[in-house]
Length: 135
Image (cartoon, rainbow, N blue to C red; front, top):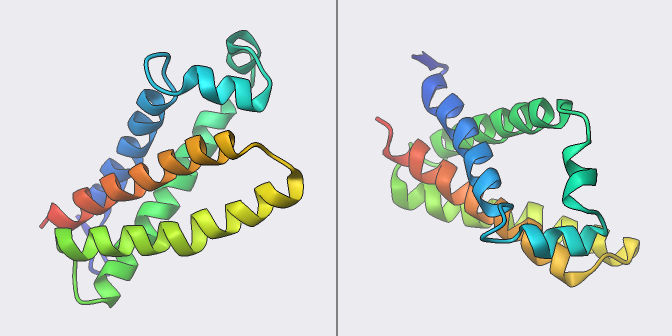
């Protein structure tokens, strides 16, 4: 299914993949402990938060995947190579750079920036691979 040369199914799959990446990234075997320490919360405190955060994350991932797909069309169509390049450029220039400034002014820990931005980079790379490979 396409919408203005954008494969909507690939966008939805990319958004679902973003949540899966987040679940794995912030899991106990990987970065959960480091992330919890950096935000100063316990696992129980985070688990007690509103489940609406997952809906917000999914809608944000849909928008992110849609914009990445649109930009891929602008630069000549989705390929894995162009998708990976664009994913890194978007991450470095918009995600990492702006969040670094926000973290600096808020006095947040570098550890938190690394964990959260590592997740964002991996999400964009996974989205790029899905959007670039899906013909």
